[in-house]
Length: 184
Image 1 (cartoon, helix red, strand yellow):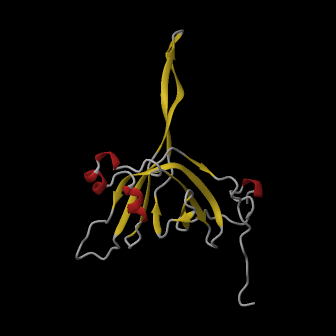
Image 2 (spheres, rainbow, N blue to C red):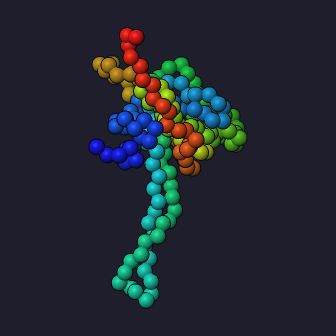
Image 3 (cartoon, rainbow, N blue to C red):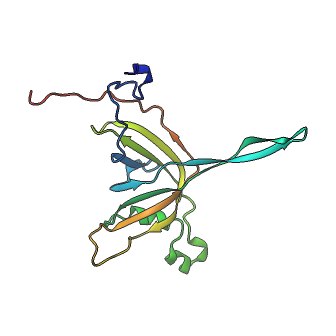
């Protein structure tokens, strides 16, 4: 058995299973409220371009250097309800009735970007990881998934968020996991 320094969980050294991906919350940092009922969040991914170059004195060797970094869009999915939050955020980018009245007033420049926080919880409901995602805005809005009279799936709506980067909140520390014996 490996020493506790070799284990992936420094606080809960007995834990060998990684965290599950089904307990999470998405918070609107600007507004301070949680986005209700989000059932799926796509992964956080960043890519850095590779710049190749050769030196004049050594034309046979290729060197590599980091180039521009970009962040993949994030998709939030949830079941269709009467909640208007996704649609209201999407309408800040383009709202057809406004564009028909006054073509210069179809985007809400003041507040179409939001900072969000994605929080991940362990099976006991304790926060274990969190990421802050900066300057998000809705580039795609799907009001309702395909409707199928013979289907049995839940109707899903989604938004795709462009963002300008994310960081892990290192102030979130591993909690001491609860232990109990029942019946007592």
